[in-house]
Image (cartoon, rainbow, N blue to C red; front, top):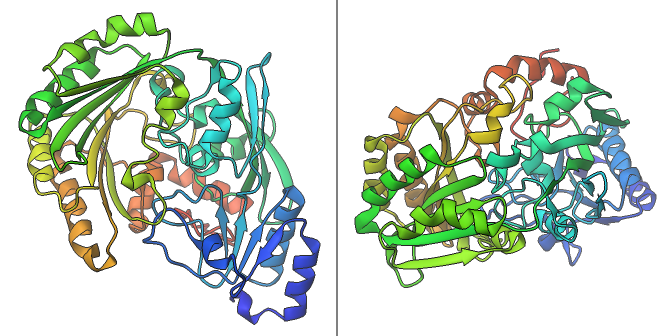
Length: 455
């Protein structure tokens, strides 16, 4: 049932019960409130509840459950599949719940569910502290944490979900519960990689680490040296210590030149980073080089890239790789020569390090043994061109098949079907189904990379 069938008096009573704002079609702010980062998702919810606190979230869950309405949960709205909104249902919008409180002595931070990475970094770096946190500062902490969470500190300090200490969750029956190692530990296990399947997380508590400085080096080489650069990237990552996280990126410069960039971050003192990153700077030489010594500057470095900005069409194909073979390198260079839009990119994220300190069964995130994460990312602005840009990303991904592990990163997954969802959860899927049966047997939370209950 959609909310359009709900009695108007009930909707008015619901609106009056909220401390936040209820946005409906026809309201001046409706279109901006329903818009998300990926223009591929153009949905029209019946109601958007801009929650002001936990009580509003509980009211939303109870209203939707009692009226048989579909719900979507919006944190940052920066999601590949566009699952922050739904057609004809209720959006539980947390974007006004963005407070972050840091305990510099305990080295912890508690952030509300609508906070974005920029909020978290701003507060933690004031004390010279940080936790792993993505690569684009406008990303919501909720979605990225629940899906695992890669970022520049992952090889030193683990994934974002590995640094989660506790979470406050509103469940499908309208209860607020705490999940941690000691309270509801099974739910806590599922939140660390199981996506938004088990409830609305209204706050996250993170472990922080001392990070007064970093050194990041970006080097850019012409695409005609792409194979040489990617082989260097492979050798560099094979010997890099845990303090270094490295990405290789095929992209097009603003003046139209195809290039291969390597960006490496040393999570520690810049003086030590200089020694470790020296080979990266000396290889080539590059046509362009840049150093970054501020973690916040690194976290915002990609914010103005076309693919990061709201309102563009984005389509991603992502897979974990067990190796980076010569054939995979050839495929990357050959396929990028066929790129269909100058905003489109392809990149490799070096995994390993602290990510492997936990096993695949320790958390719901189940892709800890991969060496690299590969992404072909189409970005464009004209919807009439959808097909050709989507085909480019799909063909690019198919070319990497021989090196794939069979797993996929949940946070890069679009609307790709049940088999791909299971590939993201891997061997933890059956345990996640059992958890879904316990906490959401009616599949109330289903606008996500869904784990279907079996009861």
